[in-house]
Image 1 (cartoon, helix red, strand yellow):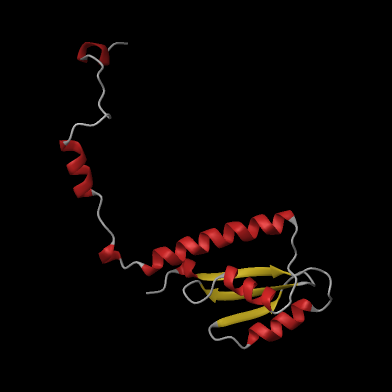
Image 2: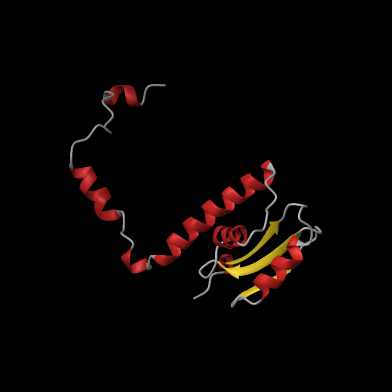
Length: 131
């Protein structure tokens, strides 16, 4: 079952120099299976559309860097990339665990409530209703 937030559309922004990096990256990524690539609104950017189970922005950009492309390293782009990397990593981790294997918290809550621990309120009963 495919969830709607698994489909990602990410913009990859390249440095202005060397020129035509976006067009070269478009040609390189266009042949990849289950991915759509188009030119971005900016002259030095492309937009990639992919399923987060198949690809991640972090791996795509790492592959582009290994091929000699230069990404825009402005502070805003670095922060944006770091946030997207983090979110996609977590989403991919969560999607890889089948729901049947996820543990329910109920047994732990019941066991915790039967054992003495430091989460008790020692306030006398007469002070609890004091206004």
